[in-house]
Image 1: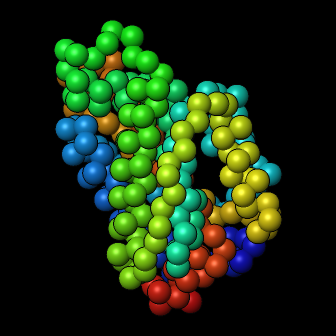
Image 2: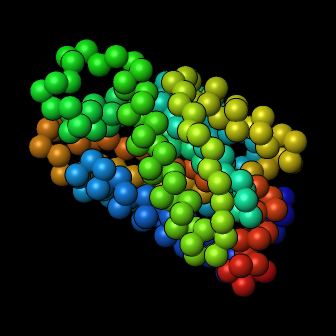
Length: 213
């Protein structure tokens, strides 16, 4: 399956619905973690050349904060929770204020901020993946989350290097979560994107489990 024409409409709809279920589970988990309302966008499913990843999801020179995990098992995949750097700092600040209140230092140490970002990303991505594996009846193991602050192009180049040995295209399932209902107006534009990239064999398994292949 090397182009979108290789997928029929039923298969694409099935992938979008799986992503929608995973995102809903992730949004619920994030809402509980931050005690805020979380809105979610309808997932987009695209087949993207690994050579175009760096320019496909925004300004490649923009600094972002990202949490990356690998899932092994029947449904092998890569998952990234990626945010603009400002949004990542606002989200981690919100979480840390809830956990430490008045004891939170005025200047948050980078290691504390990264720990919070790792916690948020791990909960979001694990919840997303748990919903998918429950749906298709498979088991998985998830790696320890990795946190990076870098240009978008550098982050996505890591993904390209992973998939370079598998083929020239990766199926990207991309959706946005947005924090709503905060009292502080500055924090009202906290968004993050979940990018799911199934391994080629995992995608075939998914479609078979959903009985659309």
